[in-house]
Length: 422
Image (cartoon, rainbow, N blue to C red; front, top):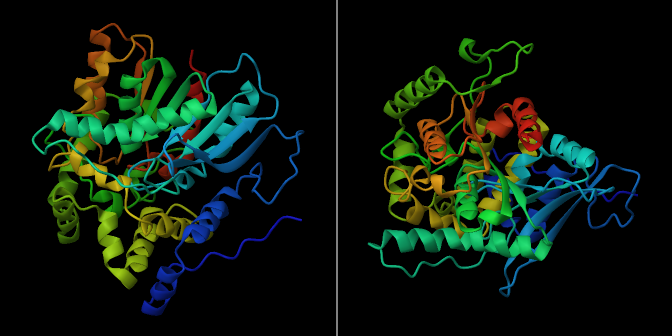
């Protein structure tokens, strides 16, 4: 008999609910909140389910993968074909963005699992070191503040060297990296350092690509909301694909919307941005508010993930609360990687041409994104300039920064398309 999980708590709507939520955050609660999301996958098997039905095309399990340093581990979801093929394409590895976790992709796992089943391959999703449910180890930078290159290198290495350690422990020769936001930035950084280990790069609303100043606002990780799918500008016929190759006109429209949003920046958002630039993180601010923290997260969950069902939103809130209120660690990388104004200290656009000329690289932005798509356009030009013609860029209609949730059907179709591209 399948074990029963306790029901998720309601999104806090009062002071007393916030107090109860705060005191029930911990490793056990964190694991339970993640499993609630993963149990929506019919092929997921929890640790309490000892029997594996090999007649199923794929099996998904959750584990901690121990890394070489003591007390370092990465929380990992493994989705593996039960009939692996010796000719299988490299596995796909999904890498979340700043302060998020692998549970954010629960709507994207089924079509990727189908891809793995058809090709006898695997799909993995990780929590970065110091984020999600991975080890919350101390994050420190030894480089001096004015030594930008060393600061960035140290901050990046905290994440990408742990990914390389994980790859080695898992016995993978190559991977296709699917990164979102800061996870996309780290995916490129990893490919630059370990190019032989990367088969393809699929970058969803990547951070840190263009030169600054631009219209990215890191505070929007907590203050942004989903696009209004009911508005006239976002209604699209279901008879037509809503992922399209980027054109100059579409990119221009996105940038114009970003400019307009910037002029309406709220006092709360400006406060978040100021604290971020002073070395804080938005998540540190939430933790410091004690009993009001869960209420802030509840408002974010209901506003940002309004396209989910009420049950999904409730479970997502519980999951976000647990990973946000955990001990701060990897989140403190941000001021070393991004300058005030939220553009990269060492922009990806200046580095991407060093990637292998045969590597496939795909940029994906939402048509209401707050990441600047001009960076993707310029990156493709620079890739072509060194002989890499394998770059592509797409715009997803009815989607903002969290493209994989805002328009999951079209992003899922695009992910499978890019995984199967030869």
